[in-house]
Image 1 (cartoon, rainbow, N blue to C red):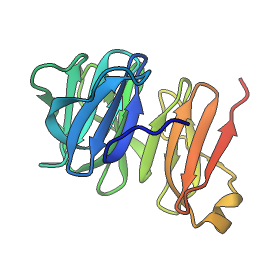
Image 2 (image 1 turned 120 degrees about the vertical axis):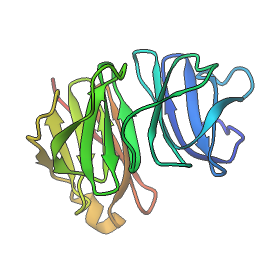
Image 3 (image 1 turned 30 degrees about the vertical axis):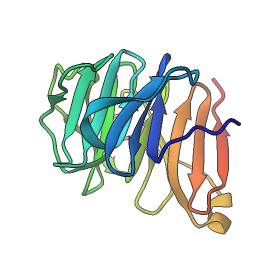
Length: 192
């Protein structure tokens, strides 16, 4: 591990850059290999996601709406047509978001079609190569095969009881990492 300076709230990495929101709601980026300096990007964000398809999505801390820009995001971002969001995650083809009522929403990563509601309620989602992972309001981990039409399957997670529940997760090529409220990290491996 190598320390990276900054007052960060949340991060997400693409193939070439790491994107972050700060505790004062700024959005910043720099080389994923740690090279270069942090560069401020226009907009304010609570949560940012870098898709593998060249799009950056974020939830604004000003109006809780979703915004998108095509990397390198040197100009103004496009305000999308959904608000009251608390979190989102962008994949290769679709972005998935959670609103303040824990409804899951999805639209194409390029924003070319309107948002659709995905059946099921989650408080946090993350997009993997083949599945969407969701943390439901009871702090239980779920997964749904893409394109996810609401057929959520619970994933047993016994360690969570001793750790105080889950607070965040991130999908990878072969599963999902989960962070507990006490700060422990667990990995669930998916066999393909």
